[in-house]
Image (cartoon, rainbow, N blue to C red; front, side, top):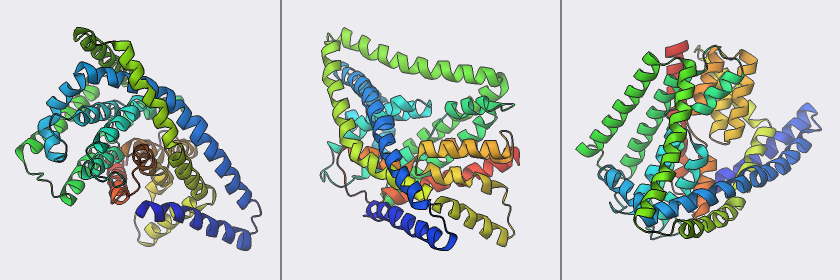
Amino acid sequence: MALNYIWTGFFLVGFLAALAQWLFLGDTEIFKRIIDGTFDSAKMAVMDIALPLAGVMTFWLGIMNVGEKAGAINAFARVIAPFFSRIFPGVPRDHPANGHMVMNFSANMLGLDNAATPFGLKAMESLQSLNPNKDEASDAQLMFLVIQTSGLTIIPLAVMAQRAVLGAANPADIFIPTLIATYTATIASIIAVGLRQRINLLHPVVFAWIGGTAAFIAAIVACFTWFLDKAQIQLVSTVVANLVLFSVIAAFMTAALVKKVNVFENFIEGAKAGVETSIKIIPYLVGMIVAISVVRNSGVLGLIVSGFAWVFNALGLQTDFVGALPTALMKSLSGSGARAMMIDAIKTYGVDSFVGRLASILQGASDTTFYIIALYFGSVGIRKTRYAVSYGLLADLIGIIAAIFVAYLFFG
């Protein structure tokens, strides 16, 4: 129900804001801008997101099916089973969903969004097979989705590349702050949902895995900081990320050949689901992206940012970070919108300014909560999202606070 009220609220608040601007400010173009935005957003949802996603989904779901038939997905599941069996207690240790989630999280951490989405949708489908109430999100699906919204990314490659294009002296200087912020958001998300679901987070296995992950990330930070310059960081990031992904493809096919699995036939069998899933999610994407455009084009987002600035000024607090807030607020709604806000902040304040760097960190510190909910739950027909919205937004909030803190620590 929460998503129902929020989605409806986007339109009603946008209408009231537009009406006020017409009556009190004489803005006769406001309704045209909003309606034009709905058409543009609806077209973008289908032509720029759903249809390109169909091609990506077709290929990767085919590859995933080959991996399943070859037993590679189950091998991933067995490796991660001790940890996942604690934070996903409703998922059997040997269930393919564990392997699918591992593949999704790995692609996300490497910044491989195009591959992460098919893996994530496959994981959600696998979790749905265990869900006794098909139209309501299960505990496991909620934990998986909230971890998604925290946006854990080890290498924010796209953000660093954008900073390089815009002339940053050191495009990779936001690497460590972004890693700290996104890792903080992810751990906090696991703890928050774990407490809600009464999961025993004090179990030694959980501690060991979280501690091991923290040590691994710290080692990456140390290596990148001490041994690589900015050009080498981008080069290593690109090579490693894509090498890992191509290695997965090769490993799946090799394992299939060893087990005498017909690789091509199984690829085609899995690939057929890609188009079906892409068509299924179009209504969800159109509905959410159009609603977001109404909020943006009606000026509500700008008004919220101005309100934050006024409150912080009234309290006598620092307001240096306010210029980056549009990126933070838009990130929960739209990835492309947040990217546009980041670029606007960089061009307004400077690519190496405090605001420019903070906006870059915010872009990589969380993920698009409403888009993810619409995409992942829509793909399996879940209508009752329970506390997905509130805890997803909590993950975003923690990521924003962590990003502001580390920005002041590194660049303030």
